[in-house]
Image 1: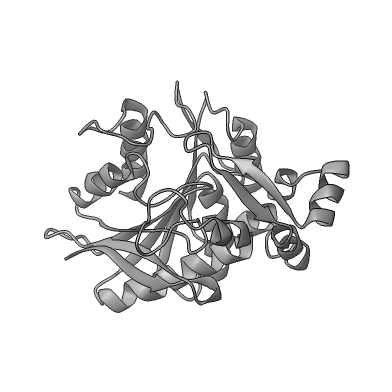
Image 2: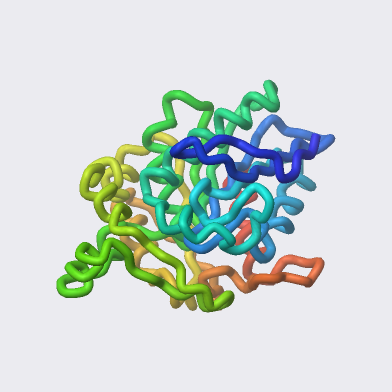
Length: 274
């Protein structure tokens, strides 16, 4: 079974795109991949990551977060800037649960689910995993260059006051050069749900195994955040030598093979899954 660009209903009733593949030689385990900030399910080499794991017997599901800026008609880049601006951390956690519900309706022979989150998606799978570990057959969580907290990502002092006064701020995507909005509702959502969105508390509450990976050349999410996650859980951080934030990939990725450091990351994740 291979479903591409199907739709699920995510947070605030917004539909978004989702892929799900069960290989012919299937081991009963499904990996669910969650992209990061300014990401999408078909970014860079994520399709090759799916291929890597399905060739080794795992089911694989990846999806666009409902308010990532994509649409049903165009899931690449950020055609819906308003939806991007309305996004919040709570929505991303809700989207993961919605995607899991959609997935288990498609295949009844899922024996175990493993969450993989990249960057901001890494923080999201920790938050979602804490909530869902008793209601789904979650077996493990794997973070790839995950963030360790949310509050430090908000503007401070005068910049915060200006954001609140104007109701919106703009951030530039370095690749598309779009100036994308972030509405102040992003911060208000965090204020309302600060305890539920505390990644340190969430990782300590996890009862299922979690493995943490980070590149030592990451300039987007400092490796210190990976070390924080590891410290809070009493784990080792798996450091990928010479790996940047996206483990050597870029958008678009035209090479038929995985980048070297992303291949290494997939191999290490596979070994943990085994």
